[in-house]
Image (cartoon, rainbow, N blue to C red):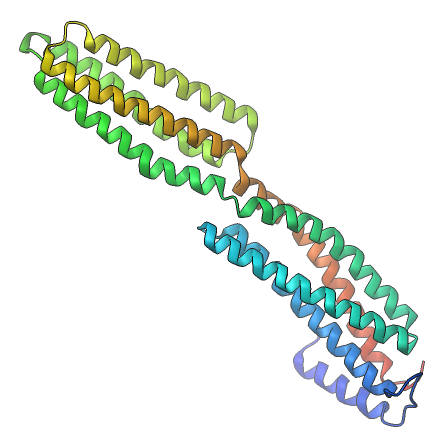
Length: 294
């Protein structure tokens, strides 16, 4: 891309070269139509940058509100591109600039392909399923695990001295199983491969079974006071399992991982192709001014 100073010199020279140009078909002088064509080409490039940047920000946003806001910015810039492109096409046709018209058509083809991918990126980005799964893991899931810990600690206190060693071992087994599930949730949320997620889910299921078996064994021969605490622990475990299942379902949809993959792998090449077509068009329009006529 030429420097700002060089661009300004080219435009000044172009305007001087077109000062005596004749009108072409209609009441608007050719030099005015060419100046407008240049302005529209410049704005197309600006709007292309805006839609690309807003799309990237929608992918990287931390909240639904931010993702939706950036997605709207993307659509607004894309709408401006549609308007500018239609106006520029009319100007080029009026000027009888067939080569430049083909350059604009090339941009249109590249941009249509980009927009198809961009819509998929934005549809996924605003769902934020991986972020929602992460918030579940760090929030309600952790709270349910802590509630289980508190209930089991109370059950240990209520256990008869003769059973304390056995109870301590089973409580440790149940708590370790839940903490390992929490550890496994993080790679599941970040994982893109279905087979790997399935393996992680099986490991979590095994640990869920371990925790439930430990609570079942704790209930054998439990005192009334201990049973009350174990009932609270079972309720916390039920809540933990319910939230974990919700987390896995969100993680499986993988909207953030998939949108980021598309944004990194597909859109940069398409944006570069769009920008290249517009740069070529800008250069051609800048050179057109030196001849005055075509």
